[in-house]
Length: 376
Image: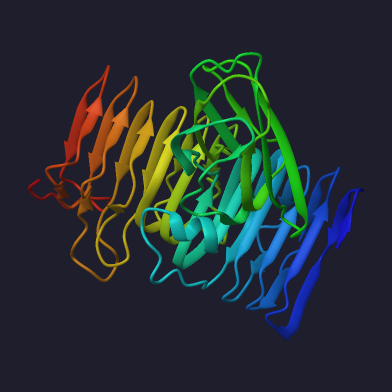
C-alpha cells in the first residue's frame, strides 16, 4: 500500500500466506497505525516495511510481528514513535560480527531516517536492532588513481538490504571539477544513475539517490590528469535522540535482543531494568550514551567500537545464569568530552582494547545490575 497522503487508520493486518510481505508507505505524509488495544500487524514469516514522513505506532497494546521475517521502519526524516511491540525471530546465525552480512542481508529490525526515535518493546533474540546506519568511506572502492573517462575498481559489498547513498572523496587537484556517474539499482530494483561533481579535494560528495545495488562508478569529466579517489557509503544517522519509554504500565518496556547497533547525532538512552542485550555492535553517538541491560547467558559483549561524548554501560547476570561479565573483547570505548562508567559482574578486556576518556574519568564498577559485587 502506497500513497502520497496521510495514513491514519491501519487497525489490523494479519496475513495468512506464508512469506507474504507487508509494505505500507506514505511518500509525503505521516503514517499512524495500530491505535487500538490488541490491534496487530502480523505476517507468517514475511517482511514488514513501514515508511512515512514520520511513523507512529500509537497503542501500547499493539503488536507488529513479522514471524521469521525482517522489519524496516523508515521515518522519512520525521519522528518515529513505536509505543507498542515489535517482534521477529529472524535468525542472523552465521552472520559476521563486523557488519558485511548486515549490509547485504539486513538486520532483524532496522530503524532509519528519523529526527528522533522512541521505543517500548522490541524482541529480536536471534538478530540485530539497527538504529541509524554508520558510514564507511572506502567500502566500495579503496584509494586508487583514476583518469578521465575511467571506471573505478570496485571492491567489497555492492548490494544492500537497506538502500544507501554513495560517498565519493578525492585528493589531488581536481581542476575545474571531477565528475562521477554512479550507476546501480534503487530500492524498487529500478536502474538509476546519479552524477556528482567534486571541485574541492577537501570535500566529500554524496549522491541524492539511494542505491540497493552498485553496478559501476565512472569518472566522466574530460579535464586534468588522474585524481586519487575513494568511494563508500554515506552515514545515515538518526539526527536526534534515541530513547526507550519510561512508562511503568504494561507491557513493561523491554529490548530483548541479540545485538544492538546505533548511529545517532544526539543521545542514546536505553535503561529499562528488563532489557536483555547480548551484544553491542558499532555504536556512534553524538552525545551521551546510557545502556543498562542484562545478557541472556552472560553480560553484554562488545562486537564493535563505542564512541560518544559520555559513556555508561552497565550489565549483569541473567535471571537463570550466574555470569554477568561486561566483555570488551578487543574493541574500544571512547568518551570524547566526558566520562566512561562501566559496570558488570566482572569486566574483561583484551590487550588490543582501549577505554579512553579524553577530558574525563574512567570508572570501573564490579557491581552488576542486581547489586552483586565481584572482582574486576
